[in-house]
Amino acid sequence: RISTDIQMDDMKLLAKLQRLWGRWAQQFDGRRSGKSVASPKLKGLLRKGVPCHYRRRVWRWVVWSRTRSLRERRPHWYHQICLRSQAAAAHRVSQQIWLDLETTLRGNRHFSFPAKHAVRQLHRILLAFSWHNPSVGYCHGLNRLAAMALLVLQNEEDAFWCLVAIVETIMPQDFYGKTLTQCVLKDFMAEKMPRLTAHFQCHGVDVSLVTSDWFLAVFVERLTSDVLLRIWDAFLYEGTKVNGLPDIQDLYTRRVRGRPKKLSKTPVTQVIDCSLCYRTASGTRTV
Amino acid sequence: MIMMWFCLCPLFQVLVIGDLGVGKTSIIKRYVHQTYSTNYRATIGVDFALKVLNWDSETVRLQLWDIAGQERFGNMTRVYYREAMGAFIVFDVTRPTTFEAITKWKEDLDSKLMLTNRESIATVLLANKCDQGREVLTNNGVKMDQFCKDNGFVGWFKTSAKENTNISEAANFLVKHIMATENDFLKSVVPDTISPKLNDSQPGTCSACYKS
Image 1 (tube, rainbow over the protein chains, first blue to last red):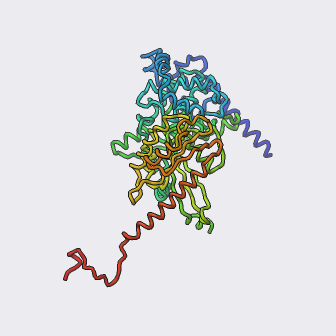
Image 2 (cartoon, rainbow over the protein chains, first blue to last red):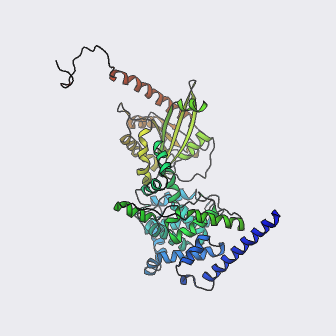
Image 3 (cartoon, chains in turn brown, orange):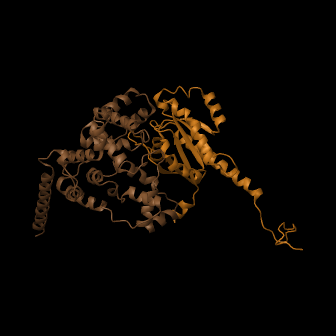
């Protein structure tokens, strides 16, 4: 009897996944990727997880819509900035990037040393970004973001724009700036988890020392790839609230204006739930 | 019971600082876990490790603070300098710029942290990656000794996290100095201590509580 129950559950899961696939096909097949529009339906689909073979298209579209105005204004920007930054390759930033690249996603065959094609691409992307946004320049963590973008998007220029989208449109201003702070997280914790916050305070523990790594690299190399990819799917589309934080920017503004407000439930648990469902169906993969 | 005993052992907080990529994390991993890997990521913020040492039939705990080398993490991490009792400043013998940065790190440390007797904390200089055979900087030992003297380091060691050279020696040397400073400090405290005594013959200086 138990085995028939399990079979029934499997059938239900399969039917559910097939329905989801159907909706993905409706949303994306037969359309040019630039033609999709943001909608609550798409948001729902993204929260449930993007099937692997749609992921590249979905991310390209999200990144495109986030960086559209800039790219339309300067169509060859990446190549121009690449040339400019390569001319000054002996720069200190370039050396910092090389140092970090030796240890970026080492477990992945595309990034294992000695210098593979993908590592050189990653170096170009990060160097170009440091020229594109000199106020951020290069910060530890950007290497992992770019590596993740390059793995999924499989195109150097798209990965560059994905980095631009994250740093300039999703994360709050100055998140990667010259002075990093995590005051927002502490406010959030104080409100959501007062007992834990009090316990930490009692022992003189500052969580930001640990958590800055998670947020700066958006969990890359901190979570298993199936959960990570789910979080990134929703993160790129919806922004920082998927990180387990409600909209950081919003909270930041509220903090600055000194008007604390009740916060809504975060969707991070929902994202993880969905990823578990996919894990049963597709097996675990590692980045 | 064991926990209580453990908590009573002296705990020394030791900072490990230096430019990015000089091998701070590798040194700590080698010292605490006896392992070496080329796969350590850049430290973001701070990492911690605890080493338990047997020192003259006493147990000593070293809490090692692996501080991120990139400048922009400074604001986040330097707040935690104040509790430290010793420090390692690390540079990479194959990269002269990391050696030039030492004075900057030392000045920064001294400006943030002073012992109560106005002396800076015991600091040891580590010339890491000496296994790479390109150590132009440290070939002149006399010069290095002079450099340490001029800049307030208690000593320096050529180390290699990869080949496990001199790391525990450097740590023992630092612990010895921390202990010595501790003892000096205890001695120096005694004369300043005010011990309340009964039948004190000295008249009080405050007019409110001493009225004749």
